[in-house]
Length: 434
Image (cartoon, rainbow, N blue to C red; front, side):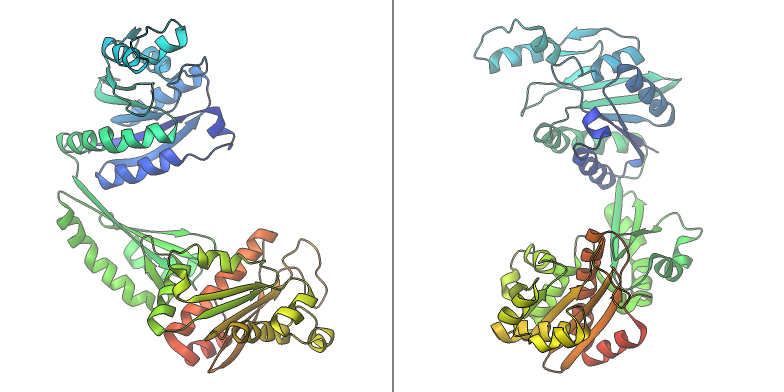
Protein backbone atom coordinates (compact mmCIF):
# COMPACT_ATOMS: atom_id res chain seq x y z
CA UNK A 1 0.00 0.00 0.00
CA UNK A 2 1.07 3.56 -0.67
CA UNK A 3 3.19 5.06 2.10
CA UNK A 4 4.49 8.61 2.49
CA UNK A 5 7.10 10.22 4.71
CA UNK A 6 7.51 13.95 5.29
CA UNK A 7 10.93 15.60 5.58
CA UNK A 8 10.86 19.17 6.87
CA UNK A 9 14.08 21.05 6.12
CA UNK A 10 15.14 24.10 8.11
CA UNK A 11 17.39 24.89 11.05
CA UNK A 12 14.73 27.27 12.37
CA UNK A 13 12.38 24.27 12.74
CA UNK A 14 15.06 22.13 14.36
CA UNK A 15 15.82 24.82 16.94
CA UNK A 16 12.15 25.38 17.72
CA UNK A 17 12.19 28.96 16.50
CA UNK A 18 9.08 28.31 14.39
CA UNK A 19 6.45 25.57 14.50
CA UNK A 20 6.09 22.94 11.81
CA UNK A 21 2.57 23.96 10.85
CA UNK A 22 3.10 22.85 7.25
CA UNK A 23 3.79 19.30 8.38
CA UNK A 24 0.73 19.30 10.61
CA UNK A 25 -1.47 20.48 7.75
CA UNK A 26 0.03 17.99 5.32
CA UNK A 27 -0.55 15.13 7.78
CA UNK A 28 -4.29 15.82 7.71
CA UNK A 29 -4.29 15.87 3.90
CA UNK A 30 -2.41 12.57 3.75
CA UNK A 31 -4.90 10.97 6.13
CA UNK A 32 -7.85 12.30 4.14
CA UNK A 33 -6.53 10.66 0.98
CA UNK A 34 -5.72 7.31 2.53
CA UNK A 35 -1.92 7.53 2.33
CA UNK A 36 -0.10 5.53 4.99
CA UNK A 37 1.94 8.05 6.95
CA UNK A 38 4.21 6.73 9.67
CA UNK A 39 7.01 9.28 10.02
CA UNK A 40 7.86 12.96 9.86
CA UNK A 41 11.48 14.06 10.18
CA UNK A 42 12.98 17.50 10.78
CA UNK A 43 16.53 18.20 9.63
CA UNK A 44 18.64 21.35 9.62
CA UNK A 45 20.08 23.21 6.63
CA UNK A 46 22.98 20.87 6.01
CA UNK A 47 23.16 19.11 2.65
CA UNK A 48 24.88 15.95 3.87
CA UNK A 49 22.29 15.44 6.60
CA UNK A 50 19.42 16.19 4.21
CA UNK A 51 20.82 13.61 1.79
CA UNK A 52 21.15 11.04 4.59
CA UNK A 53 17.55 11.62 5.71
CA UNK A 54 16.32 11.29 2.12
CA UNK A 55 18.15 7.99 1.60
CA UNK A 56 16.81 6.57 4.87
CA UNK A 57 13.24 7.62 4.06
CA UNK A 58 13.38 6.34 0.48
CA UNK A 59 14.56 3.00 1.78
CA UNK A 60 11.37 2.67 3.84
CA UNK A 61 8.63 4.38 1.88
CA UNK A 62 7.17 4.99 -1.57
CA UNK A 63 6.96 8.79 -1.53
CA UNK A 64 8.91 11.46 0.31
CA UNK A 65 7.51 14.98 0.54
CA UNK A 66 10.09 17.58 1.51
CA UNK A 67 9.07 20.97 2.84
CA UNK A 68 11.46 23.94 2.78
CA UNK A 69 14.88 24.69 1.40
CA UNK A 70 13.81 25.77 -2.11
CA UNK A 71 14.60 29.48 -1.81
CA UNK A 72 17.38 31.58 -3.38
CA UNK A 73 19.91 31.65 -0.54
CA UNK A 74 22.96 29.50 0.04
CA UNK A 75 21.29 27.54 2.85
CA UNK A 76 18.41 26.45 0.56
CA UNK A 77 19.83 23.03 -0.22
CA UNK A 78 16.90 20.67 -0.73
CA UNK A 79 17.00 20.50 -4.54
CA UNK A 80 20.76 19.99 -4.51
CA UNK A 81 20.33 17.17 -1.96
CA UNK A 82 17.66 15.46 -4.08
CA UNK A 83 19.84 15.76 -7.18
CA UNK A 84 22.82 14.25 -5.32
CA UNK A 85 20.81 11.31 -3.98
CA UNK A 86 19.70 10.38 -7.51
CA UNK A 87 23.07 11.29 -9.08
CA UNK A 88 21.63 14.03 -11.28
CA UNK A 89 22.54 17.58 -12.20
CA UNK A 90 20.53 20.66 -11.36
CA UNK A 91 19.27 22.16 -14.63
CA UNK A 92 17.26 25.22 -15.56
CA UNK A 93 13.57 24.58 -16.17
CA UNK A 94 12.74 26.77 -19.20
CA UNK A 95 9.05 27.05 -18.43
CA UNK A 96 9.57 28.24 -14.87
CA UNK A 97 12.40 30.55 -15.92
CA UNK A 98 9.99 32.18 -18.40
CA UNK A 99 7.39 32.48 -15.63
CA UNK A 100 9.91 34.29 -13.39
CA UNK A 101 10.77 36.67 -16.25
CA UNK A 102 7.07 37.34 -16.89
CA UNK A 103 6.50 38.12 -13.21
CA UNK A 104 9.29 40.69 -13.42
CA UNK A 105 7.64 42.51 -16.30
CA UNK A 106 9.74 40.85 -18.98
CA UNK A 107 13.13 41.82 -17.60
CA UNK A 108 15.64 38.99 -17.40
CA UNK A 109 17.08 38.56 -13.86
CA UNK A 110 20.84 38.62 -13.72
CA UNK A 111 21.45 37.48 -10.16
CA UNK A 112 22.50 33.84 -9.55
CA UNK A 113 19.89 33.62 -6.79
CA UNK A 114 17.05 34.19 -9.28
CA UNK A 115 18.38 31.40 -11.48
CA UNK A 116 18.48 29.04 -8.49
CA UNK A 117 14.72 29.47 -8.13
CA UNK A 118 14.19 27.95 -11.60
CA UNK A 119 16.63 25.03 -11.23
CA UNK A 120 15.35 21.51 -10.67
CA UNK A 121 16.99 18.05 -10.70
CA UNK A 122 17.50 16.71 -14.20
CA UNK A 123 14.49 14.64 -15.32
CA UNK A 124 12.15 16.17 -12.73
CA UNK A 125 9.08 18.34 -13.32
CA UNK A 126 8.55 21.84 -11.95
CA UNK A 127 5.42 22.29 -9.83
CA UNK A 128 4.00 25.79 -10.41
CA UNK A 129 4.05 28.09 -7.40
CA UNK A 130 1.31 30.70 -7.85
CA UNK A 131 2.11 32.42 -4.56
CA UNK A 132 5.89 32.69 -4.77
CA UNK A 133 8.95 32.40 -7.00
CA UNK A 134 10.46 29.04 -5.96
CA UNK A 135 9.04 26.21 -8.06
CA UNK A 136 8.15 22.93 -6.43
CA UNK A 137 9.64 19.67 -7.72
CA UNK A 138 8.16 16.33 -8.76
CA UNK A 139 10.66 13.54 -9.39
CA UNK A 140 9.62 10.00 -10.31
CA UNK A 141 12.51 7.57 -10.26
CA UNK A 142 13.81 4.32 -8.80
CA UNK A 143 15.74 3.93 -5.57
CA UNK A 144 17.08 0.72 -4.05
CA UNK A 145 15.36 -1.33 -6.75
CA UNK A 146 11.87 0.11 -6.38
CA UNK A 147 9.78 2.90 -7.87
CA UNK A 148 9.56 6.03 -5.75
CA UNK A 149 8.35 9.62 -5.86
CA UNK A 150 9.92 12.74 -4.37
CA UNK A 151 7.89 15.93 -4.05
CA UNK A 152 9.56 19.16 -2.92
CA UNK A 153 7.43 22.01 -1.59
CA UNK A 154 8.50 25.50 -0.43
CA UNK A 155 8.66 26.36 3.27
CA UNK A 156 6.63 29.59 3.65
CA UNK A 157 3.07 28.55 4.63
CA UNK A 158 1.62 31.18 2.28
CA UNK A 159 3.20 29.19 -0.58
CA UNK A 160 3.22 25.66 0.80
CA UNK A 161 -0.40 25.32 1.90
CA UNK A 162 -1.95 26.47 -1.41
CA UNK A 163 0.35 24.06 -3.28
CA UNK A 164 -0.78 21.23 -1.02
CA UNK A 165 -4.43 22.03 -1.71
CA UNK A 166 -4.18 22.88 -5.41
CA UNK A 167 -1.56 20.39 -6.62
CA UNK A 168 -0.53 17.78 -4.06
CA UNK A 169 -4.01 16.72 -2.90
CA UNK A 170 -5.26 15.84 -6.43
CA UNK A 171 -1.91 14.17 -7.17
CA UNK A 172 -2.21 12.08 -3.98
CA UNK A 173 -5.72 10.93 -4.84
CA UNK A 174 -4.53 9.55 -8.18
CA UNK A 175 -1.26 8.16 -6.84
CA UNK A 176 -2.88 6.28 -3.94
CA UNK A 177 -5.44 4.73 -6.27
CA UNK A 178 -2.73 3.68 -8.75
CA UNK A 179 -0.66 2.23 -5.90
CA UNK A 180 -3.45 -0.10 -4.88
CA UNK A 181 -3.89 1.47 -1.45
CA UNK A 182 -7.17 2.22 0.29
CA UNK A 183 -8.71 5.30 -1.25
CA UNK A 184 -10.47 6.44 1.89
CA UNK A 185 -9.30 6.88 5.46
CA UNK A 186 -11.80 8.09 8.06
CA UNK A 187 -10.88 9.15 11.57
CA UNK A 188 -13.00 10.07 14.56
CA UNK A 189 -11.69 11.61 17.76
CA UNK A 190 -13.65 10.91 20.93
CA UNK A 191 -12.81 13.62 23.46
CA UNK A 192 -12.86 12.71 27.14
CA UNK A 193 -12.59 14.77 30.31
CA UNK A 194 -12.67 13.32 33.82
CA UNK A 195 -10.65 10.17 33.11
CA UNK A 196 -6.91 9.64 33.38
CA UNK A 197 -5.26 8.21 30.27
CA UNK A 198 -4.76 4.84 31.98
CA UNK A 199 -8.45 4.67 32.92
CA UNK A 200 -9.57 5.62 29.42
CA UNK A 201 -7.18 3.06 27.94
CA UNK A 202 -8.58 0.42 30.29
CA UNK A 203 -12.12 1.12 29.14
CA UNK A 204 -11.07 0.96 25.49
CA UNK A 205 -8.59 -1.93 25.85
CA UNK A 206 -10.88 -4.49 24.25
CA UNK A 207 -11.06 -2.30 21.16
CA UNK A 208 -7.32 -1.56 21.07
CA UNK A 209 -5.81 -5.04 21.49
CA UNK A 210 -5.43 -7.01 18.28
CA UNK A 211 -7.40 -4.55 16.18
CA UNK A 212 -5.96 -2.99 13.04
CA UNK A 213 -8.91 -1.77 11.01
CA UNK A 214 -10.49 0.18 12.53
CA UNK A 215 -7.69 1.02 14.93
CA UNK A 216 -8.22 2.66 18.33
CA UNK A 217 -5.47 4.61 20.08
CA UNK A 218 -5.46 6.85 23.19
CA UNK A 219 -3.67 10.21 23.29
CA UNK A 220 -3.17 12.17 26.49
CA UNK A 221 -3.70 15.92 26.40
CA UNK A 222 -3.53 18.49 29.17
CA UNK A 223 -6.44 17.64 31.43
CA UNK A 224 -8.18 15.40 28.91
CA UNK A 225 -7.78 12.31 26.75
CA UNK A 226 -8.50 11.63 23.09
CA UNK A 227 -9.41 8.24 21.64
CA UNK A 228 -8.60 8.27 17.93
CA UNK A 229 -10.57 5.78 15.80
CA UNK A 230 -9.32 5.22 12.25
CA UNK A 231 -10.72 3.03 9.48
CA UNK A 232 -9.39 2.38 5.96
CA UNK A 233 -11.39 1.17 2.97
CA UNK A 234 -11.87 1.65 -0.75
CA UNK A 235 -14.63 4.21 -0.22
CA UNK A 236 -15.53 6.65 2.51
CA UNK A 237 -18.90 4.96 2.98
CA UNK A 238 -17.21 1.60 3.59
CA UNK A 239 -14.73 3.15 6.03
CA UNK A 240 -17.52 4.85 7.96
CA UNK A 241 -19.41 1.54 8.12
CA UNK A 242 -16.35 -0.10 9.71
CA UNK A 243 -16.04 2.76 12.20
CA UNK A 244 -19.68 3.06 13.28
CA UNK A 245 -20.12 -0.05 15.51
CA UNK A 246 -16.83 0.60 17.33
CA UNK A 247 -17.73 4.23 17.96
CA UNK A 248 -21.21 3.27 19.20
CA UNK A 249 -19.80 0.71 21.65
CA UNK A 250 -17.17 3.12 22.97
CA UNK A 251 -19.73 5.89 23.43
CA UNK A 252 -21.81 3.54 25.59
CA UNK A 253 -18.81 2.66 27.76
CA UNK A 254 -17.54 6.23 28.15
CA UNK A 255 -20.90 7.69 29.17
CA UNK A 256 -20.70 11.14 30.79
CA UNK A 257 -16.93 11.38 30.43
CA UNK A 258 -17.28 11.74 26.66
CA UNK A 259 -17.80 15.45 26.10
CA UNK A 260 -17.31 15.82 22.34
CA UNK A 261 -15.95 14.55 19.05
CA UNK A 262 -13.38 15.66 16.46
CA UNK A 263 -12.77 19.42 16.60
CA UNK A 264 -15.12 20.11 19.51
CA UNK A 265 -13.52 21.66 22.60
CA UNK A 266 -14.59 21.62 26.22
CA UNK A 267 -15.15 25.42 26.34
CA UNK A 268 -17.22 25.22 23.15
CA UNK A 269 -19.31 22.32 24.43
CA UNK A 270 -19.92 24.13 27.75
CA UNK A 271 -21.08 27.28 25.96
CA UNK A 272 -23.45 25.30 23.74
CA UNK A 273 -24.88 23.58 26.82
CA UNK A 274 -25.42 26.96 28.48
CA UNK A 275 -27.25 28.23 25.39
CA UNK A 276 -29.46 25.13 25.19
CA UNK A 277 -30.33 25.50 28.88
CA UNK A 278 -31.00 29.23 28.50
CA UNK A 279 -28.45 29.99 31.23
CA UNK A 280 -25.85 32.73 31.55
CA UNK A 281 -22.41 32.52 33.15
CA UNK A 282 -20.06 34.89 34.96
CA UNK A 283 -16.63 33.96 36.32
CA UNK A 284 -14.39 35.41 39.01
CA UNK A 285 -10.71 34.49 38.83
CA UNK A 286 -7.71 35.11 41.02
CA UNK A 287 -4.78 32.73 40.40
CA UNK A 288 -5.90 31.97 36.82
CA UNK A 289 -5.77 35.67 35.93
CA UNK A 290 -8.60 35.62 33.38
CA UNK A 291 -7.57 32.41 31.61
CA UNK A 292 -11.00 30.82 32.05
CA UNK A 293 -12.68 33.87 30.54
CA UNK A 294 -10.16 33.83 27.70
CA UNK A 295 -10.81 30.17 26.87
CA UNK A 296 -14.54 30.78 26.81
CA UNK A 297 -14.46 33.98 24.79
CA UNK A 298 -12.17 32.46 22.16
CA UNK A 299 -15.31 30.64 20.98
CA UNK A 300 -17.29 32.61 18.35
CA UNK A 301 -20.73 33.50 19.67
CA UNK A 302 -19.72 33.16 23.32
CA UNK A 303 -21.70 36.32 24.13
CA UNK A 304 -24.88 34.25 23.84
CA UNK A 305 -24.16 32.84 27.30
CA UNK A 306 -20.99 34.37 28.75
CA UNK A 307 -21.78 37.61 30.55
CA UNK A 308 -18.65 38.73 32.40
CA UNK A 309 -15.26 37.80 33.75
CA UNK A 310 -13.71 39.50 36.76
CA UNK A 311 -10.03 39.17 37.70
CA UNK A 312 -9.97 39.82 41.42
CA UNK A 313 -6.28 39.32 42.03
CA UNK A 314 -5.63 41.46 45.08
CA UNK A 315 -7.84 41.00 48.13
CA UNK A 316 -9.10 44.57 47.89
CA UNK A 317 -10.31 43.98 44.34
CA UNK A 318 -12.25 40.93 45.50
CA UNK A 319 -14.00 43.16 48.02
CA UNK A 320 -14.75 46.09 45.68
CA UNK A 321 -15.60 44.17 42.51
CA UNK A 322 -17.19 41.01 43.91
CA UNK A 323 -18.42 41.94 47.37
CA UNK A 324 -16.12 39.49 49.18
CA UNK A 325 -16.05 40.81 52.72
CA UNK A 326 -12.75 41.56 54.40
CA UNK A 327 -13.74 39.36 57.33
CA UNK A 328 -13.82 36.30 55.05
CA UNK A 329 -10.21 36.47 53.89
CA UNK A 330 -9.09 37.69 57.30
CA UNK A 331 -10.67 34.64 58.94
CA UNK A 332 -10.22 31.95 56.29
CA UNK A 333 -7.46 33.27 54.06
CA UNK A 334 -7.69 34.41 50.45
CA UNK A 335 -7.14 30.82 49.28
CA UNK A 336 -10.09 29.12 50.93
CA UNK A 337 -13.47 27.57 50.30
CA UNK A 338 -15.31 30.53 51.82
CA UNK A 339 -13.61 33.05 49.54
CA UNK A 340 -14.05 30.88 46.41
CA UNK A 341 -17.80 30.56 47.06
CA UNK A 342 -18.10 34.29 47.75
CA UNK A 343 -16.28 35.01 44.48
CA UNK A 344 -18.60 32.71 42.52
CA UNK A 345 -21.80 34.11 44.02
CA UNK A 346 -20.45 37.66 43.77
CA UNK A 347 -19.65 37.28 40.06
CA UNK A 348 -23.17 36.05 39.36
CA UNK A 349 -24.76 38.79 41.46
CA UNK A 350 -22.82 41.66 39.90
CA UNK A 351 -24.18 40.95 36.40
CA UNK A 352 -27.30 38.96 37.33
CA UNK A 353 -25.96 35.75 35.76
CA UNK A 354 -27.55 32.36 36.39
CA UNK A 355 -24.28 30.60 37.18
CA UNK A 356 -21.08 31.87 38.76
CA UNK A 357 -17.64 30.30 39.00
CA UNK A 358 -14.95 31.34 41.48
CA UNK A 359 -11.28 30.30 41.38
CA UNK A 360 -8.64 31.16 43.96
CA UNK A 361 -5.36 29.39 44.63
CA UNK A 362 -1.58 29.29 44.67
CA UNK A 363 -0.19 28.76 41.17
CA UNK A 364 3.46 28.98 42.25
CA UNK A 365 6.31 28.69 41.99
CA UNK A 366 6.29 30.31 45.43
CA UNK A 367 3.66 31.67 47.80
CA UNK A 368 2.64 28.32 49.28
CA UNK A 369 2.30 27.53 52.98
CA UNK A 370 1.96 24.37 55.01
CA UNK A 371 -1.83 24.76 54.92
CA UNK A 372 -2.05 25.81 51.26
CA UNK A 373 0.98 24.47 49.38
CA UNK A 374 1.73 25.45 45.79
CA UNK A 375 -0.87 23.92 43.49
CA UNK A 376 -3.74 24.32 45.96
CA UNK A 377 -6.80 25.70 44.18
CA UNK A 378 -10.32 26.21 45.47
CA UNK A 379 -12.95 26.01 42.73
CA UNK A 380 -16.53 27.05 43.48
CA UNK A 381 -19.72 26.91 41.44
CA UNK A 382 -22.79 28.95 42.34
CA UNK A 383 -26.27 28.39 40.94
CA UNK A 384 -29.88 28.72 42.05
CA UNK A 385 -29.77 25.16 43.36
CA UNK A 386 -26.85 25.86 45.71
CA UNK A 387 -23.10 26.34 46.08
CA UNK A 388 -20.40 23.74 45.62
CA UNK A 389 -16.69 23.99 46.21
CA UNK A 390 -13.76 21.64 45.65
CA UNK A 391 -10.23 21.79 46.95
CA UNK A 392 -7.86 20.78 44.16
CA UNK A 393 -4.22 19.77 44.52
CA UNK A 394 -2.69 20.40 41.10
CA UNK A 395 0.87 19.60 40.06
CA UNK A 396 3.09 21.18 37.47
CA UNK A 397 4.54 24.53 36.53
CA UNK A 398 2.70 27.79 37.14
CA UNK A 399 1.20 27.73 33.64
CA UNK A 400 0.14 24.09 34.02
CA UNK A 401 -1.55 24.73 37.37
CA UNK A 402 -3.42 27.70 35.93
CA UNK A 403 -4.58 25.76 32.88
CA UNK A 404 -5.66 22.70 34.89
CA UNK A 405 -7.64 24.93 37.25
CA UNK A 406 -9.65 26.24 34.29
CA UNK A 407 -10.02 22.70 32.94
CA UNK A 408 -11.55 21.58 36.23
CA UNK A 409 -13.88 24.60 36.15
CA UNK A 410 -15.06 23.71 32.65
CA UNK A 411 -15.50 20.08 33.67
CA UNK A 412 -17.60 21.13 36.68
CA UNK A 413 -19.78 23.29 34.43
CA UNK A 414 -20.13 20.48 31.91
CA UNK A 415 -21.22 17.99 34.55
CA UNK A 416 -23.58 20.46 36.23
CA UNK A 417 -25.29 21.37 32.97
CA UNK A 418 -25.64 17.70 32.10
CA UNK A 419 -26.51 16.22 35.47
CA UNK A 420 -27.55 18.98 37.86
CA UNK A 421 -27.30 18.59 41.63
CA UNK A 422 -26.71 14.83 41.45
CA UNK A 423 -23.63 15.37 39.29
CA UNK A 424 -22.27 17.94 41.75
CA UNK A 425 -22.74 15.57 44.66
CA UNK A 426 -20.97 12.82 42.72
CA UNK A 427 -18.00 15.11 42.06
CA UNK A 428 -17.89 15.91 45.76
CA UNK A 429 -17.72 12.22 46.58
CA UNK A 430 -15.33 10.80 43.97
CA UNK A 431 -13.42 13.85 42.74
CA UNK A 432 -12.95 15.07 39.21
CA UNK A 433 -10.74 12.42 37.65
CA UNK A 434 -10.90 8.61 37.76
